[in-house]
Amino acid sequence: MSLLGVAALGAAGYAGMHYDAIGNFLSRPAVAETNAAAPAPADTPFLQHVKQAGLQACSNVFPGLGELLTNGAQYSVQSTWNTETPDKHAVQALVGMNYATEGYKGAAAGVVVAAPTGSLCEGSMVRVAPFTAPCADMPALLPKGSKLANNLAQISVYELPDGGNAMLLPTGDGCAVISVASVTATQGDGK
Image 1: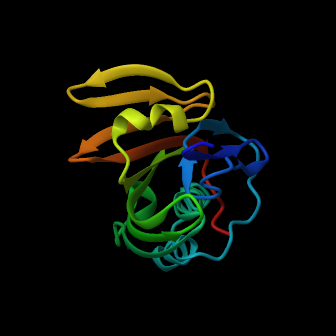
Image 2: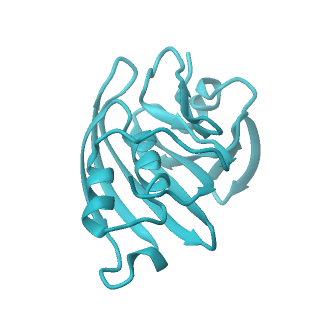
């Protein structure tokens, strides 16, 4: 059983594999770089916000990260962007999620940010999910090959096998699991 599912943006687009207990709940973040064209993203609120904003830059990265963040959840999104020159600035989404999976039932929160950097777009997503189990129990549930990379005060930071990080934040008797993923890709054509 593992705590985090796997999702990555790859050279062919979006790829995913999931761990048994949690299914599609938490993405095991991955760092990916690609110059290949991604398939057309699903018609999600993230894609709708890209269209509303008139974004061309990051039109593939922003919805892709949003899909990874919210996979398996019911969610609401609030996005912000520069209305005058959206392709020269970051686009950001605040996301409230509700999961009802076998491995996790409850709320989670996330942030997606994507910004143009020359001919590329760089983006990140962060998900925070509270668990009732203590943080001491969480490392055994992380994907095989995860390694403790650092301790930042009382927060353990794990490097995950395919990139990205998981942070374990003690919350009284429970643990908030913070997953982080980043991606760099060519800017979308807005189609």
